[in-house]
Structures are given as C-alpha cells and as structure tokens.
Image (cartoon, rainbow, N blue to C red; front, side, top):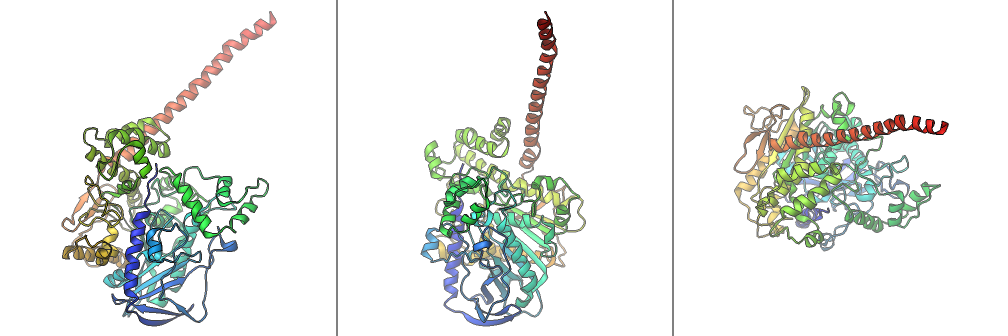
Length: 599
C-alpha cells in the first residue's frame, strides 16, 4: 500500500529557495578565519550571519561510495560560503527543476546560521531534515529566524539518501547506514569546529522531524555518540516507529544488481560492489525510486541492524533498561511530540490504488469496506504477522461503517496512532521511567488554522486537525508562507505563536527546559511515566493535558500485543499437539508392524 510524501518536501524546498533568492539581492559579505581556513559568508535580510556549503566530509565517490564517510579537513584559500549547498542525489521534481536546485554527489556539507553580534559561545541547535530517507536537504530549512529569536547557533546538515545512504546487503561487505554515519561525522565536525562560528561545542541539541526525528532518536541510542550532544527533540518521528527501521525483507543482492546493471557473482560478491561503485548518480536515484514504487507500508530503504551502530532491534533495546544504549539515552534531556493528524500522509495515497478501489480520498474519503478489508489487512500483513484478529480489532476500534467522513478521519488517526503517537509515548515512557538524571517533555501540536502548504490546495472537506509537519510552519516558515500561497492569510496571532514556539525550542537548547531558566510557573510540565502530562501547542489553546489518546495508546501497547501473543501460543500448542499425535502414532503403530513382520 503505497503512500507518497515527496510533495511535502518539494514545497519546503520551494519556499526556502524563494527566500534565498530574496536574500541574494542584499548580501553584506563577511569573512571569517577558522582553524580549517578562511570562509566568506554574508549577513541576510533578517540580520543573521550565514555560512553556506561548508564541507564536513569528502565527496562519497570511488571507494568512498557505499562506505563510511571520511572527514574533509582543511581547505585552501577563501572558501565561498555564500552560495547554497547542493542537495544529495534524489529524484528531481518540478520545483527542483523550476528553481534550478543543484544536486550533486559531493553533498556532505552543512550550513551555519548565527546572530550578528556574538559576545560569548552560544548553544548550538543541529537540524536533521526529514523526507523518508530519500528526499530533502539542508537548504530546505532557513535557520536564521530561529538563531536570531533565541540567540543560538543553528546548523542544518546534508546526509546521503536512498540507496546511496542506506544500501545494505546484510553482511560485512555492505553494512548500510551510511546516511547515519554522515550525520555522526557532521556532529563530530560541529564538536571540533563550531566554536569558530560562535557556538559552544558542549551545548549541542539535535532536532528533526519525520525521518529527521527518527534519525535524532536513533542517534540518541548510539552510546559512542556521548559528548557530541546533550539534548534531543524528536518531532513526529522516533526510532521505535514501525517505519523508522528497515525490518522487512531486503532486496537481494541480485535484484539490486539488476536494477543497477551489475550482474551478481555467487563466487565473488565484491565484484558486485565494485560494479555498483561505477554506476552514475541518476541510475542509482532511478533504482531508489523503482524500489519505493513497489513498497508496502514497510520501509524499503533505511537504517538497518548492522552489528555496529545498531546491534539488535529497538524493541529489544527498550526492554533492557540496563543496556548501554538506554543508559546513554536517559542521560539526555528530550522533547518528543506529534501532530494531531500525523496520519495526513494518507491523503497522498497512490491515485492508482484509489482508482482501482473506486474512491477519491480528496473528496468523499475512505470507505469503511476499503479501510477494513483492504488497507488494514495490508498494514497487519506488513507489521503484525498477518494476524486477522489484529485486523478485526483495528477495524472495530477505528472503523465507522455508517459515516464515511468520520471513517476517513479515524483512518487518519489510526495511521498517526500506529506509526507516530504510540511509538512516541513508548519512547517517552522508556526515557522517563526511574530517570533522575534528565528531563522528559511531550507536546501535541494541534494548530490547524494554517493548513500546511503541501496540503492547502487539496485538503479534503472531511479533514480535521494538524497534519504531518504542520509544526514546521511556525518554527521555520511563518514569515514566508504567503510567498508560496497568496491565498493563505496570516495575522498577528500566527507570528505570536511562532515566537512562542521558537522561544520554547531555544529555551530547551539553552537550559534543558522549554519554560526557561527561572520560570516560576511550569507552563510545560515534565512527562512522568505514570501521569503522562503533555503541552498542547495551539494559538488559542496552549494548555496542559494528561495521557493523550490514552485509550488508543493502551489498545496498541496492550491489546494488540495480547492478540499476537494469543495467536503465537495457539500456534505453539497446535505444533505441540501435532508432535504428540505423531509420537502416539509411533507408539501404537510400530509394535504392530513388528508383530506383523514376525508373524
């Protein structure tokens, strides 16, 4: 069951590149001397210092392709930090072509945004973009407003995507996770060099949304990252989500080789790798696209258990409170949040599927029959061992047979609950339980007055709530929303809300507390495993709640595993009975055979 999310990131790309074009008209050049060399930057229209396209890793070509990244090191002369960094190889879109976005294999670069007047080392916030591990880039997000609002240094980073970043054969030859290794190398570069730009290397917060949030969560479970960052914000994406990790069957060496035109050699598999390293960028991107076109709700390309960064499934790590992964995780202050309708990605369901089953999700929505007899069995087949009892229970919990509009809204809620909310609450609970070292915070983003720009033109009449990635409007984009869609109307309350969120995010980066250092009132309370308090983020309803969607979370955390356990127990009993019947047959029949033979 294919869901496409590329249009979200296309619009993010467009809106930021429009801003960059505006910045190009009035750049005040500056030059900075760093330990790696001199770099030219500029002061933008928001009165922030910006340095683009700083290399942290060597170009991943030749033997560096499908391998861990290597540090870039020093550069000669004055480096040009005024031109936008390229995107890592990905599928071209209308916006990328229209705005002439540069895509280049030599993409292991980062961008730095700082206030103009820096008198002391400032806390650092490192943004990791989302995009399903296949699209997006550092230039999709302008960090200048956040840097200026909170008096922090903001860094946005590129990392390899698709097969370039996550190809894995499940062996020691091609382990995978190269995109995660890129992120780690970028963090090491920041640790070693950010002081040259006014940042404090000991006060680093990593944050990201969707696959970026999942990346942040994964990085927070790698003990060797200790010292690279001390706080983490995970927005609509965590490591234990069913779509954060590639747990399903991987494409075989032979299948991927065929896509790339490289024959598989049973005797010498290294020859396949050698061939693949000669394949050009466009062919690898086409292969990535082809793999996603045949994908179900499982993640076809992404992080994997490699025996090095990740030694076992996240669920096993979460169940082992004494593990070094959990000890490191609980040493960090964290914020984890979701949007009320993160399942809005369903709106982008493959049109071919909609046509085949005779519905239009943008108009009348999902039918009860499609939800319960097609969509849910697909999800259950992918993630719950194909257990029909789970499919029936999900249908009973979410399906609305007599109201198609409400059935559609519940389908959005279900998708959000399964892939975003429930894993977020599980992550929060694991972090907060018996944790006296660090702080835990949860938010629920519910502001829906400005539909996100990727949805604005096609938002179905039945849709309600804040869609996936809508929180990004207020962190990054509020000032330029109308550049992309003049029909959207913003007012003072939108800017006030954006300022509030930016203050909360940067307060957390500075103090480990979104309320600030000396707040008398706990406007945003900590999350405790027994109470599960959260802050609702909304323009007119910034309120504290408890146990958000508790019934649904309990259903997914207790009822569904119970159904799977019952099925597993029944299967073991069936196998046991069959074995006993076979032994009974031997006991009864064999002596008779012997007597017959003797007779």
